[in-house]
Amino acid sequence: MTDDATTPGAAAHQKIDTSVPHSARIWNYWLGGKDNYPVDEEAGDAYSAAFPGISTIARSSRAFLRRNISYLVTEAGIRQFLDIGTGLPTVDNTHEVAQRLAPETKIVYVDHDPMVLAHARALLTSTPEGATAYVDANLSDPDRILAAAAETLDFTRPTALILSNILGHMGDYEQARTIVKRLMDGLPSGSYLSINDGSRGFDAGFEQAQDGYNSSGAVPYFLRPVDEITAFFDGLELLEPGVVSVPFWRPESTSPAPELVAEHGGLARKP
Image 1 (cartoon, helix red, strand yellow):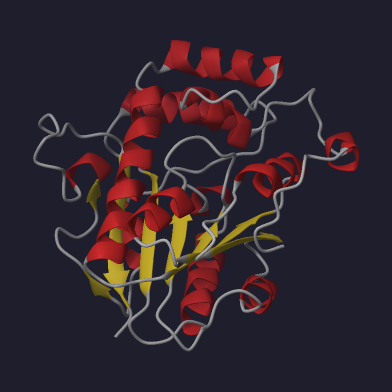
Image 2 (tube, rainbow, N blue to C red):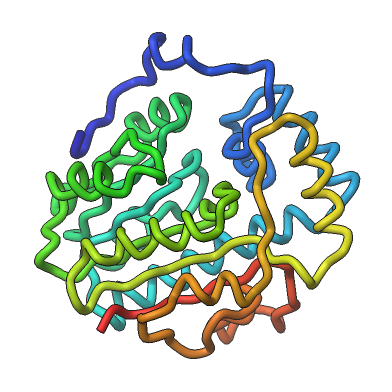
């Protein structure tokens, strides 16, 4: 599916349930995107009414990812990215940031939502020098992800694994850790792991809103203590400043002073 810029097809849309809010579409709404339905906007507005800070968390998460990718390309020399849990395209997607800095960069996106699949194929296009591809797979099947991604990426070369706000969808913490380890085992020395997820223990309003959302029948997302997020990096070389509230991860000098949000992340290198 490299460089596949097709129009979202009717077959894909027939699989989309527009009667139930979907986390990727709600996140897209909070980021100012247009790829969502009234049910998602209603759920997003209800969440924002309970916890107005969610839009700040969404924007802070995207800015953290952008700074991660910029570091990986400009300072670590990474030219391959495996981004799992792509979500719906908005602004500063992984390939846009990476290929803006190094046009030859290759990116494989992974998701299993039919709406994400349709829009990714249409919108996540590449520079002529690089490549983008999309893998329709679930995070719970790391072997399939690695095998499919290897059709575009060269796993003898360092690769950055991006897991942005996806591990919280796995309720079984040990299973999530096992999957992260399996994915990193498939990447060579010099590869990197970027993770950011919602955190528990910093904002009671956020926790109450998220717990309410999880009990609504929508696909749940579980906030985790920072020490559990940090443990995903076990065995890797965690870069400074470690796992921190995402606005504090190497903030740009031109940005306002960072403020703590209940979203923590970090970046680590595989020795």
